[in-house]
Image (cartoon, rainbow, N blue to C red; front, side, top):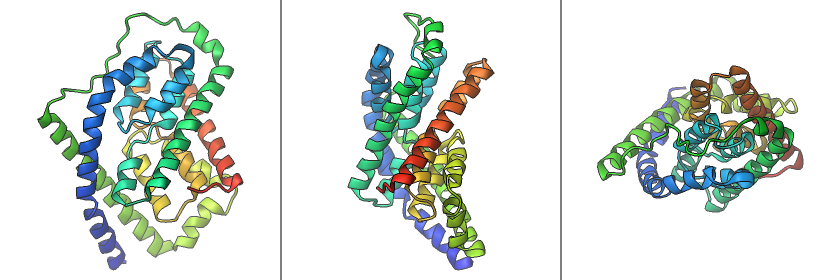
Length: 283
């Protein structure tokens, strides 16, 4: 048990430099593209889910928060919001990069999330078009989202903060997984996700709904450790909207509408995960 915990700690410490440089580069790209991305999605109109799916893949948790503000302000539709939520990667990309996952695998997963987000966005638009017609879109809404200053010091501190935050999440998750594997056995844990059809996707979707980076860290780490397969992994990552759900629930006081958004996100994510598992798709 002690050796398993020690190995998890050492492996987590090795990730720090990779996480830091990844967040530093991502932060530079985020600051260069953030304003343009938000303007594009606000003016997308009927093709909103396309822009939402593509721009949602930009590796920043703030974009799902911005999309939530836009939705509350009636700037974007439910389909566009769902497309953003489902394509958002949160901490998946930095962890994959720091773990030296093959580039082809990362690209396939990101592309799958974008395509699924776009398709799901249009499906939601078809079924919930009545809701969009009831929501009058104001012309000059900008929301309350702000990405902060673009100075180098802010970028450096933000990268350090994110690195330490995700590192401690990875450390806790890794230690917990190591303890669970040693105490219960990896076959027993894997059986929880694989033994009963659809149960793995249902559980992974619930984990994905955790409104912070812990969700994507847990799902990604379980996938890398071989505990879950492609279906549950995609379900969890599709349902993981980062802080977007927190912003939605805080800013939108129509709790029935919030529950509907969360329910749609969860059900659609589980359905995609089950389909991926049934088709035997791997990444």
